[in-house]
Length: 283
Image (cartoon, rainbow, N blue to C red; front, top):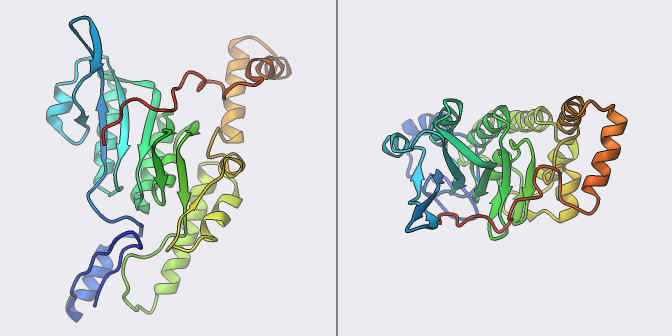
């Protein structure tokens, strides 16, 4: 018996009947792209001979790299490669560095370059990013596909200069179990609830489920806007607008009129200074 994990690559395991149930229990749901695990990486700028240059790339999964980070260091953060459950520990290490003041994220931005991975881990990463108010970006020369999209959705605000690609999730195993259809329907409910939880429209769920798992649909600029994947969700924008209006001691109508003048012909508020080519990201 074999386990076929994606159209992008194949992982084959020989199973005995006694092992089949164990494998079924151990395999999580996935969205494409087997391979090496992703890494949550960071790097900073350093002055050498009066010239600014990139410091070496470091990883949130490496305690030595975290220990070497000086207090208050401003870092550029990148998520690169296939998403796996172990990446959650690295993400929690990052948020602890931010909470303690050991680090500051440049522009409050997390850059994504991933072809997918584990859907459950991706959704947990998305929730973690949203709780900490981080913004997410896909740079001009990068792409975020499959499960990566669900992690990217966690950004309080989101910007896409590269490519976002979606398709329907699938089980990574081919075992013919009596409850396979029930399990898939449960996956559908989990995915629909996640999309609603993060304040994206139901039409995004419908768009994901309409794409067969063996292909990837790259979202157009219009689709990115329609599904709130490029920009900010309405309830989050209302919250931010109300807070800014209070700070400026303006009524909501006055603030929105001022905001319209500021944003006329420009990028979304709070993101207009971002170079969408991205910093020199590790590859």
